Length: 106
Image (cartoon, rainbow, N blue to C red; front, top):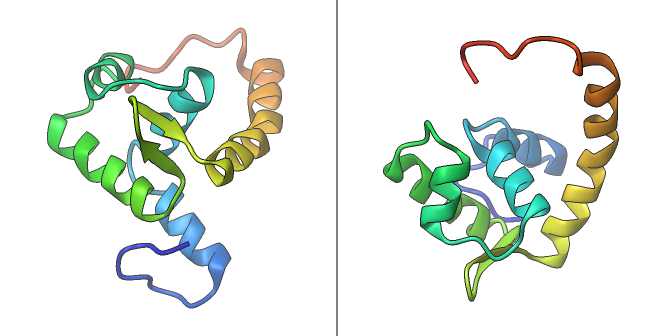
């Protein structure tokens, strides 16, 4: 998985670097939930993201071969696999955070 200026040669560290970038997880989650989104629809689903940050993150994810930009943005097979790996976190959060009020940070 190529990423910009990897800080480590260890694949897990490169993945964590990519996933730790602001908005990356949200974009992946939105594409996992609803494939084929346009730039505009992703901006609407990620309401506070700036166009320049969204563009940068989409570029990062394309370079990492996790998304493709054909007929809207969609997850590649590798991106779908990563999305499936996020499902246990989703279920855990539903169980443990379902009754908490959302924070003001979003």
